[in-house]
Length: 156
Image (cartoon, rainbow, N blue to C red; front, side, top):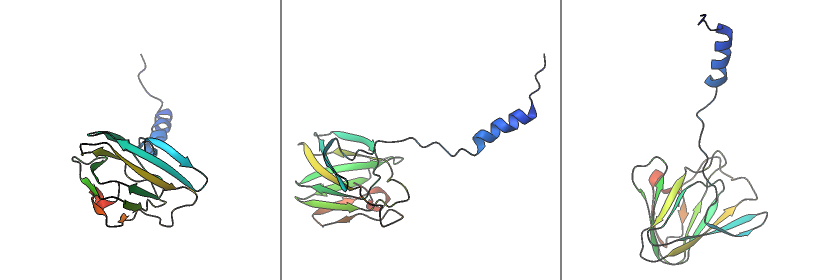
């Protein structure tokens, strides 16, 4: 029985795979659990989390504004982090603006309500234009609460 392999075929087959970068899994880009408005310029999401509830891994593709209308506490975890390193204590009207940048989406992350009542916040995605920044920038807040996060507080 001939067990020799056609060397040209083998090199061609290996060549098909050696240039393929690591396949990245995809994560939902839905910024919340309910889409409440969309037009050609903005997409508005609502996210409600029950006590102890979590929205699993997702990632943002667009610059966005996050608005927490009520006082609440939540934690978050970036993909690859061992612990829940993102911490949010929101006072009424807490706002976070996140520049995602045009180069790539934010690191997939999840969020959990650590309070004893349901919490709802809104995420407004700016979808009509490309981000003015190539890279992700640190989130900016209005100071109505604290936001401490993995990767220097870049996500919520």
